[in-house]
Each structure stands twice: as structure tokens, then as C-alpha cells.
Image 1 (spheres, rainbow, N blue to C red):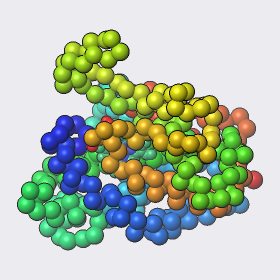
Image 2 (image 1 turned 90 degrees about the horizontal axis):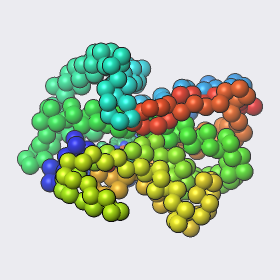
Image 3 (image 1 turned 180 degrees about the horizontal axis):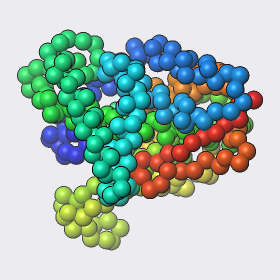
Image 4 (image 1 turned 180 degrees about the vertical axis):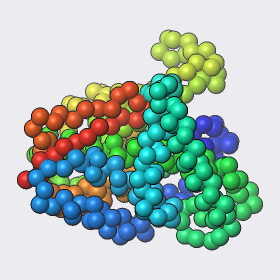
Length: 319
Ligand code: HEM
């Protein structure tokens, strides 16, 4: 939910969820998240090298989720383990990976057990975190325990690796493009625009699956009802007719829009949160580390095949 539903069910879920993820609702998180970034980044000062993905990009979005849901940060490593195992159960085409599925099922059961316990604990107890808010909804908007657990699962699966991958790809591109990196170091106000351009170039969730609910003719090709279609947002983002010189990083494009958060009714629910996380991470990182490059002999490798696309690691030379 809501990703597996069509309107009108999907519209109801979006109406209920939207207020929790609006810019107004997430803005108050900013000071706490900035302080968490300081705790993550300050220990790197004085080091010659780090793995930006393993030490920063994989950790921060999980902490954001825990903060948003009012959960203790010491659950972070459990959540990372649960999420990795569950995501590892299917490959990019949605096919179950046999070797991973047994461990995945066990970890999914652990995550389910933890979330079920929390839901039972917080039902009817007012609080200002998202989980308590979801559990306190009443009347037409009231959600069952199963619905709330399903939503928590979706946030873990949709909101963690996507941000990790976007941060990893973004810093990798900036490491390879020192001129553009210097632009944001000199003028941090450019960071929000830079984020859009980096997301355009490397969308972490480029494949959006759909099933035709009626016969469609597309470019002369008839797609019968029930046809499974995979659209590729990355291709739309590099449309030469729309973006001059589409493969280059340019923070001054006339058209700074892109499709990396999807299109239409299923457009990303967490886009404001993702942008906030990325802006804070880029601001805090570049304040401390304006100069960095990819460490010699460690070309970053892309995780593949996989539903969301990111880097295994990003070893950076910091001095
Ligand atoms: C840079 C980070 C992110 C990217 C690139 C991204 C990308 C996307 C895309 C492409 C879709 C559309 C899927 C479709 O049409 O089938 C989507 C949907 C969704 N995203 Fe994100 N996402 C990101 C971060 C987040 C975060 C942080 C959350 C946490 C709340 C989140 C929650 C969701 C949800 C719940 C949906 C389903 C919406 C619906 O079906 O109505 N995403 N995301």
C-alpha cells in the first residue's frame, strides 16, 4: 500500500498519508537530522579515506526513518540487516532469488514481528511521530493493524535504499566533476538545484512496473489487457530533445525537472523527505569535506541486477 493499488483505494491511502510527508510536517525534523549528520561526519575528519556509501549513505536514511517513526536509533543496524535481506529476495525483474529467499523470509518475519509489537504498544497512545499518528486516525481514515504494518514495510523498502543510492551516486558524480562540485562549495544555495540534476542523471529507481488494465496501442504496438510493462525513467531523463547535452552535469539547465520520483498518481510520496535528507547530507558533507576524489584502484561498482540501483561502496580520498 499504496503502490500496489489503483484509485480509488490508492487515492484514499494517499489522502491519509500525504499530510505526514508534506514539507510542513517534515521541516521540524531538520535540526535533529543535522545533528545526526554531525555525529556521523565529525569522526571522519582527520581520516585520509572513507567509504561514503557504507559509512554515511547507508546509515543516515535508516536513522531518518527511525527518527520519523519515533524509534530508538540503536535499532539502526537491525533495520539495515532486515531491509537488506528483504530487498535481496527479488532481483530487478521481480523474480525471487532462491539462495537469498530463506534468509530473506526469516528476516522479513523478524521485521514483521518487531513492527507488530510496536503497533500493539502504540495503538491509541498519542504521540507526534508518524507511527503514532497513523495509529490514532479515526473514522473513515482509521487504519487496521495490518494496513499500518504494511505501510511501515513499504517505507522501509521504498525510503531507505533509494536515498542511500541517490546520495552515493550524487557524491560519486561530484567526485568526478570537481568544477561543478566547487560551484556548490562556493554557493551552498545551489545544492537544491544540484540535487535535481544529480537525480536526473542517476535515478535510483529507474524501473517502474505496470500492468495494462485495458488494451493500449503504444507506438503502433498493441499491448493486450494484462501485459506487464516496465518503463525506464532513466531514458526519459536523458531525452536529447529536452535536455541539451543530456549526459553532462549542468546545474544551470533551463529545464531542471526530471522523472526520477515517478509520474502520475503513484508519484513518490517521500520526495520532500528524500530532498530534505539529500540537502542536509550535501550541505554538511561539503562544509567538512570540500575536496575529495575517488580513491585510486577502487572504481565504484553498481549493484546489479536489482530493483533500485546504487553503488556497493564509494571509497573516497579525503585529503
Ligand atoms: C531519492 C529517493 C527516492 C526516489 C528516487 C524515489 C522514487 C520513487 C518512484 C520512481 C516512485 C514511483 C513508483 C511507481 O510509480 O510505481 C516512488 C513511489 C513511492 N515512494 Fe519514493 N523514492 C525516493 C524516496 C522515498 C522516501 C524517502 C520514501 C519514504 C516515505 C518514499 C516512499 C514512496 C512511496 C510510499 C511510494 C508509492 C506511492 C504510491 O504508490 O502512491 N520514497 N518513489
